[in-house]
Amino acid sequence: MYLFPILNGIWQGFFISILLFGPAFFKLIHTSIQEGFKKGVILASGVFLSDLLVVALCIFGFSEFMQTASFQKMYSLLGAIILFLLGIKSFRHQYKAFLISYSERVPHSKSLMKGFALNLVNPFTFILWFNVLGSISLKYAEEVQYKLLISINVFTILLMLFLMDVLKVFLSHLIGKKLNARIFFTINKYFGLLLMIIGCIFLVRFTTLMGWWK
Image 1 (cartoon, one colour):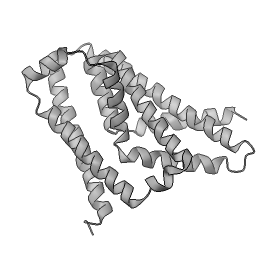
Image 2 (tube, one colour):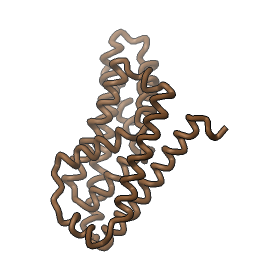
Image 3 (cartoon, helix red, strand yellow):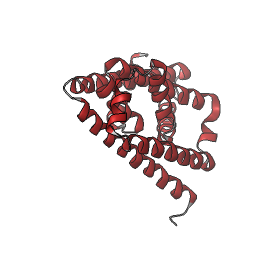
């Protein structure tokens, strides 16, 4: 009985991980290339914890509030502003200033919080988990151990997402070992540009929710 939700969670987690390209994904790759495997895993742990928080909020009855138009508008605008500002900061970084920050040791807690925050400011994180939990709930609706089966399935998805993130960190770290500071600087520039693009996407979503495109 318990094998099915585990297997279901494995393929769902694998599928979601392949299709997931939010700001946290790009930060994960960026951190792993530039700062190494350990920092990448810590950042991935932050992403895992933020997903866990969203799942907990949904389970404890906050999903209806988080699906309201006012919440989605506020979150899309907030995410757009934060990502755009972070993107500008990375993109405008001068080479000398970059070398100084590159040589500095970033505290582990800061890497954890970056992963947590970047995943959490993404409004699509909430939409993803609303759909996942809704789909899983329907699948086990007629089972006697309904809550336990859902919990096993969801935890397996979360674990699979984390393991896939660790794999991405490992592969990115292998690439990073072959790169020099000048290439890291260029990657940092493109990372800033990517954040600004994602910020613009969130801004477009905000304007769409506001009905300004009608």
